Amino acid sequence: MRIDGVPYRTVWVDPEDGWSVRIIDQTKLPWALEIVRLTDVPAAAHAIRSMQVRGAPLIGAAAAYGLCLGLRQDSSSAAMERDAALLAETRPTAVNLRWALERMLTRLRNTPAAERERVAYLEAAAIAAEDVAQNAAIGRHGLPLIEQAVKPGARVNILTHCNAGWLATVDWGTALAPIYLAHDAGIDLHVWVDETRPRNQGAALTAWELGRHGVAHTVVADNAGGHLMQHGDVDLVIVGTDRTTRRGDVANKIGTYLKALAAHDNDVPFWVALPSTTIDWTVSDGIAEIPIEQRSAAEVTDVTGRTADGSIATVRVAPSESPAANPAFDVTPARLVTGLITERGRCAASADGLLSLFPEQRRSQ
Ligand code: MRU
Image 1 (tube, rainbow, N blue to C red):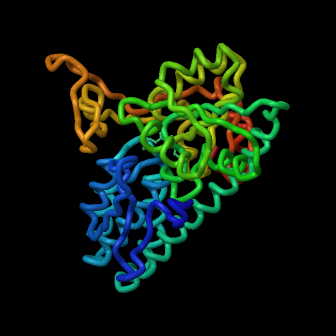
Image 2: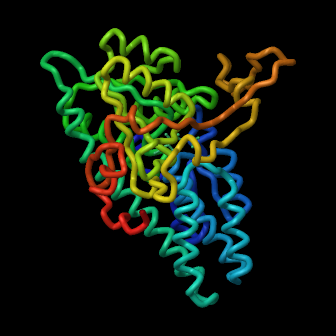
């Protein structure tokens, strides 16, 4: 996507040195566009853990490039396995991280040590390129849902949660890909952007990227969605996911489940957009089986923003003696999901629905 006319991706190899990895530091948005240069595995692990890069597909691609950085320094099998383990433990919920590292290791374990660095960069580039193509396809398969919601003389109102836009992927985004295509096709649409406490990925990132692309949007408090649906102000919900089970349960940013409940109660279609790299075919029951990341209490008790004088400040909003809990994801059961939008098309959120699009996974049943 473009920022002020300049095309960007969220992760890329520095064209000048041909090996270091560049990322957009998402902890600085929307106040500053800062590009960070990663040169080793600890820096890549820190970028993922601290959420300089975030979003399920992007952390997979970033981890793949992180492994390349490690192989530059030591291409032995022991070092490679150690680095992959370090990167894998940075964030537990999004399955793309584990998927990308497994794909890299599968390719590299059978590659002679002297060849590994070169092969690793090729494989990481393939992971990134495939993510871009998959998300573009998700956009094409999601577009008809927005076209069908068009009513004469009225805008299409879409609600989204967290950031599942191009910042969460290598490019295009998942939930926002159909929205960008619909906007570019001239459909009059408007996006309700859940602020997405505690880290405010909606207010800070989704609002920023929609704004850069000229998409009409309004940031709302996380608790506003049910009210908006009761009053007919939401035509459909589209969200992303960090891990979807083989039967269609969906883990996504905390608060997604409550939006699905409100959508169900108000007959608002609730769609989930995902590349197949986000499907964990090894798990069925999302509530029982998906590990939920527990993050720092400070993300709940404190809020960071820009003050009137332009400086960035963090203030505490809870009493200093009050403890806080911070489960970062929740699981929406498949029964509350209208359908899934994947790179191969749309399907029901069920084992049969997913297997109809991915029949090669029948063997792992
Ligand atoms: O904690 P985050 O910001 O990494 O969580 C991101 C989300 O929950 C996104 O909705 C999800 O990764 C889908 S992104 C295409």
